[in-house]
Amino acid sequence: MKIYYLLRLSSIIAISVVVGCAANSMERAPAIKKTNVEPPAFYAPENQYYYFTAAQIQRKKGNLDKAILLLRKALNLDPDSPYLQRELATVYLQNKEGAKAIEVLEEVLRRHPDDIKALIIYGGTKQVRKENKDAIAAYEKILALDPKQERVYSLLGNLYVGAGDYARAQATFKRLIEAFPSSYAGHYYLGRIYAKQKKFEAAEQEFKSALDLVPERPEPRFELINLYKEQGKTSQIIQLYEDIIRSNPNNIRAAVELGLYYQQQGMRSQSQKILNRLGQRSQNEFEVIITVIQLYIDPKKYKDALVVIDGMLKGLPDSPDLHHLAGIAYYGLKKYKQALVHFKRVTPPSRFFQDAVVHVAFILQDDGKSEEAIGFLTAAIEKDPENPDFKYYLGTFYEELEDFEKAENYIQQAIEIEPDNPRYYFRLGVVYDKGNKKQASMDTMRKVIELDPKHANAMNYLGYTYADLGQNLDEAERLIKEALKYKPNDGYITDSLGWVYYKKGQFDKAIKYLKKAVELVPNDPIMLEHMGDAYLKLNDKSNALKYYRKSLNIKEKDKEALEEKIRKLRHEGS
Image 1 (cartoon, rainbow, N blue to C red):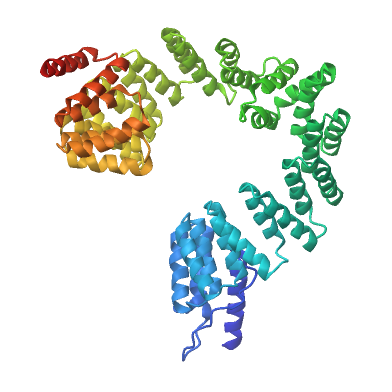
Image 2 (tube, rainbow, N blue to C red; image 1 turned 135 degrees about the vertical axis):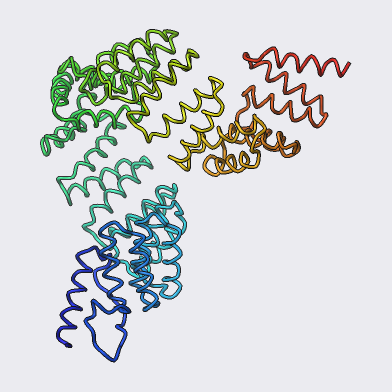
């Protein structure tokens, strides 16, 4: 029996490693509970190994709640095991329960303050939660306990960089190099700090040291290129780009940047040769498109983007993907006519076809060409009848034209294709409201909340509708307070809460929230009118008149009603 027991025990430990045990070994394995009879360990219902192994199996299956429950049962049998506590914290993190993970880790560290593995998990968790002071303290303690924790230096140094504490960051990376003279990371990150401080010679030396250690890495070369650009060292810049491309012909970033650099230096033939080739490659290598987006579109460097894209289009003139990027760049520069030309050249099966169609429609609508926008969307639907977004946007355009029947029809068609999309239901609820179908609007907003229990705008819309109708005011208050949990600084939701209190007759409370709403959204005529209404209820006619006038200066719709309120107040004051 003893041999069988040991065999089973060894197999359990092996399984625990395979299914993702976070540490390399149990430095203090939980003691096995003694019983009068020696059953096989795997089947012992009160054996912590059983619960631990079962937890790892559930974790591998993705059943994290079950894994947590099983680990807690293991800890009940061996409450002092730091290994089990670390495992529990790790699963909490995997389950996105950071606060519970921190609680467990703090208990481990209370009992075992020098547990390096727990400190590493704790520091990482604090860093992810952006509690960087705690993360820094944890990492500093780790290095004081064990200066050979190589990766911790980089984590700590970069936290100091993020905090703008370059002196400590520099000291940390120097300590890393002292402890590990062949540390690529130490030299590379120290070089970046020197570069930020404009210490070009020191930065250059560190980047070259990093390259000596790992010659195939492109990052130090890119950093050297940036240094040399600040110093105008053209030949060195070109040489480094060529070195990167020679080492890895698939390094698209280097090719794109070199093509742009040649153009900026007036070396147009060299630029065109590279960019033409990139345009041709983009047909089969989507990474080319992604690289242009990351380098120039996402950072909103639209002028540089257009230089690159124009060169690439010469290599592949009919590329819908490149025309889409050109459209985005022109749109970002507010050159809408040029954007329109390029967006219209984006055709199926481009992955950007939907986005281009929507851009065209909105450009036309903003230009006062609503009918043309509708025609364009209608034609797009004929090409792609199962695209719910096209029908959704067509519905919103009819909403703008106040053709609510057609708006309902198209948004409902979108819902038929994608029946669980809360965005579609929310818009449908708004259209119902604008078409004076209050009950249908409220029912639809309830559906939105059912689909997305955190949909703050739907909660606000439903709560405000209740308040406006003078119905279910307690439920209105509950809904709007819930919405504010998710959008605490939303002026429109804050105004809704003030309006609920107004409807409840709690005018002082109403003014408190309405004032905050007006601070958040200063020029909304409805909010300003609400303020006037609340002050009027408190018989503060001076303030009421002030806010009515402010509202009237902005408001167009219902202008006559506001003017009537002002006339009455003037008459009462005379």
